[in-house]
Image 1 (cartoon, rainbow, N blue to C red):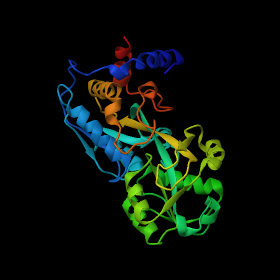
Image 2 (image 1 turned 45 degrees about the vertical axis):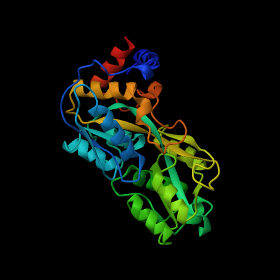
Image 3 (image 1 turned 90 degrees about the vertical axis):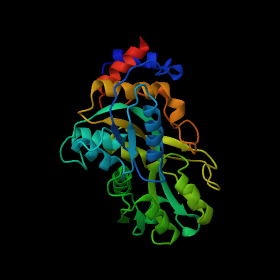
Length: 313
């Protein structure tokens, strides 16, 4: 997309927050949204999105399904088992280019950039871990094998030169392992606060380690897909303000998704941004109509791009 087209789209999106899909005749069909784990924001967001799509006229009959998240979602899009999928921006770019951990490019496009994901390195307050280096040689839960956080975890520790005993665990498993002293840290990628971590903090006091000091090394290796983000004080009870690494979440579409379906989804994102924020979310990390088209190296789906241009007028 050229700078001129992007500028035009951005100008138009500034007016979309008050738009409505009322009176718009979209396609009537079923769609599957590949989301994420129970207890995380991927699934919560996808369920809200499905609700809004199901209220469209006519309804799209959308269903959000729980998965291990980014990597699995890309496989589902590739194999035709999902129509839409939530994927971390770094994983999406790697898949689009056929870069590690993918051996060949995967075909897909983007409906839009939906919210910012926060990489959260969680440790017990009583665990004696105060930096990434303190985890050298120790067991760390590094995300489910089909997740984007597993990709990020391996990149983070490799770039930092810190060898750890990696364990690929689902979030619930990782939380139980941290509480039972079976791992000394867990790395999770999600919204702030993540409800499952808030619940853990009630019985096992936790803290988060700042990761922003490792941002230059990651950007040197993987580009500007990673950014510094701010975790506000008391996002988790007793955890102070800190900075960590964030990455955009993209709503991706399978190659077979028709233009009219993609356009209908884009219209819902643009018109119902405020309705797509899970109740537990803090701050401005969620969908912003001004940044919907900021999908990096991943091209917009032609139907979504047409919808944004039409809304601009």
